[in-house]
Image 1 (tube, rainbow, N blue to C red):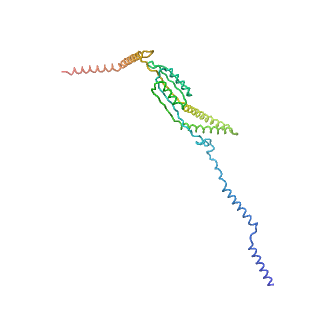
Image 2: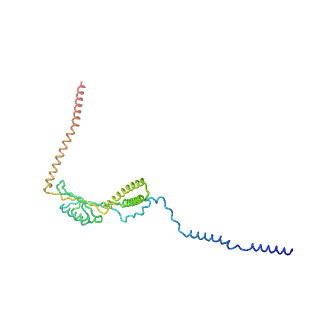
Image 3: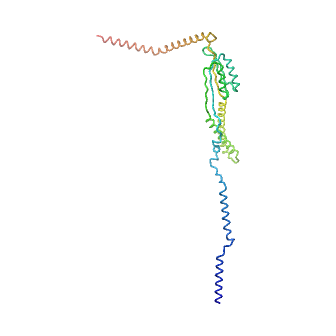
Length: 298
């Protein structure tokens, strides 16, 4: 019996040691390995995927913020307003005016103002204003100088590039704002008060747009067409003529002499109100002095 018990104890100890030394079953290790692999795969995908776009800022909802200054192209060429003036002495005024009209039309321009008359010496004189393309201003001015004797010539230029660029930015922003208001106006479910407020703002924006567009058209016209003003006069006649010459000069001189004489007499009459009282006061003072001096004699 003792041997049997010893053998049983040895067998039990051996079985217990074998169970302790045996590896864990496969179904116990799988649940731990699969989540780790999935976690590593998800981490790799997260590292490889591009970052999500940032959320829109609150200012992006306003129509003005959606139109940055860089969205309007900078003018490739300068915006310059060029105008000129010219004074000529011509032999015949009518011929010179006719030549100016013809040259202006050939250059692609037009005449805006024209006037004629006579100076104090009886010589005929005139003035004409032309609008010609800015690119043809120098050439047209040179052609006008050949019509007579040049007395004065002047060309002026004004650079409005910065003002023009700023105007285009403001106009673009106002148009985008109007588009935003139209979208809000067409949105269903608006209240009557909201609709009235939107229409009021749209009217204000439309007024600013019309004003900016009008200024832009005016600047475009001033840049594309130059204004040229020409003053003309015929030579002053040296012989007797109708309304001029020597007799006309003498008449003008005698007329000025008479006017100066009348003005002098009028000035003297007006001065009597000051001279007469002063003379009377001096005479009275002198008489009193004579009387006092005679009484002081022994």
